[in-house]
Image (cartoon, rainbow, N blue to C red; front, side, top):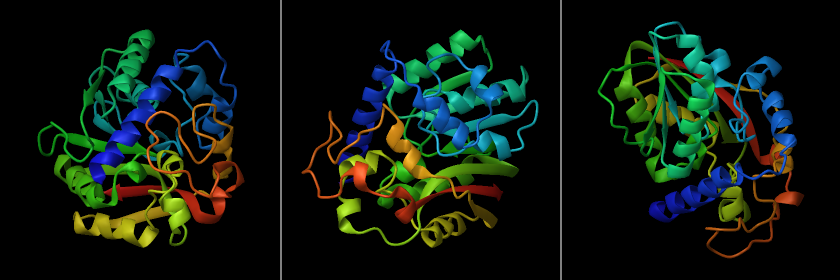
Length: 273
């Protein structure tokens, strides 16, 4: 089942990367990014195809990134946070993005070239198994991605974070978490899964993953953002079938009619290793 989920997510986000090359304007993407914490200055500094309106926060904004550090972005997509980090760590630092979708890696590499940044790179891999040495990263960030990992593999993601962090390292995560148990008509809706809703863990479960990986002093804050803004994104599916790679049957819960805010929230996690 987890392989099917990975294939579904990979197919959908591959489609999104390819759609970014269309000449059609995606006016809502800046509104979404601004609502979830990016400044006008942040967005104006990025190449045209970097902001796809897929973020649910701005982890770079609270990661306390320092010059010369190595920062790893789990699920880097088009590279929006990697680009912002690369400028903060400077030429003596490294910004590394990890993503499992080849089309997203290609788009991100193009964006890095357009931004003329030499201290950023991308790795094609799943975020629960990253080909980097133990204790090699100062700070790990992630933006609206861990919710897409199947429940059977989520604990492995946090173990991988613990393995990679240097002593005294930091984690800054923006993610979608469930406010209450999600009913079957949500969890079995594949469009809601790739839309970062159906795979959301409850806060207590998320904290459990972190404790099992050895983290203490975890701070999770509900930003109280309006997640219904995602419905305005031209990249995300608007109905119970998500187009290419959807799989499964349509369900009675249509995205356009569902109040995202009732079921899930945008939460930021700040963690010290």
